[in-house]
Amino acid sequence: MNRLISNYETISSCISRAAARSGRSEGSVRLVAVTKRTPDVWARGLVAMGQLDLGENYPQELWKKAETLADLPEIRWHAIGHMQTNKLKRTLPLLTMMHAVDSLDLLVSVGKLMPTATRLERVCLQVNMSGEASKHGWDQDSILNDAEPIADAINRFGIPVTGLMTMAALGTDAESARPAFAGLRQTAEKLAARMGHPLPDLSMGMSGDFESAIEEGATFVRVGSLLFEGLAEA
Image (cartoon, rainbow, N blue to C red; front, side, top):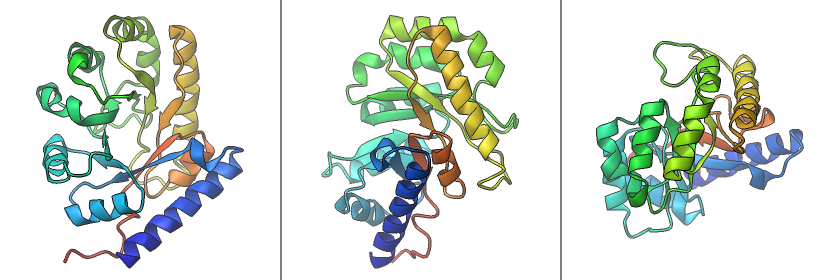
């Protein structure tokens, strides 16, 4: 696990420096280690280092890992990918955070299952800042137009919506992705003002661009490939 430790320490240092450049503390940014399609032993290694926030893109993989790692109840599971409504019932009770609620219908479905979501602390609404057809989520205008029904759903069901999430466009680098991150921050400020509901969380930035995302206000960064770079399955 020496390589995993080295990668983790390098990423943690990058997060700390990026936070400092944006005038914030390291503690204002949380790393979500994206463990999709990786061996369970790597997740165990991360937990042993104190990295408790683990993210999965696919519900079935999350179910399997949560079962295999049930002896580590301190893990905080994050669902970071598109969620089909028929996967919610089994997934929500496992989650600490859901990053990618990408429609009003899905938000309402989450709300109806809130009594089962006993660990859920945070929910982010996904905004498609790149405008790519392959990505899910509201666009910037539609999420602002939906401010009232979003607020109604939050209040009616007690959904802990705390922020917004996005992914940069395919093919961008840390600098060319920056406008999308700045745009998400601005959209969150506008939406919060319209709803009268604070949205302090910004889930944005992955392996290739998380430092610029932090500089633009990210509070959660989702890093996978960089974390496991150079590791080989036994």
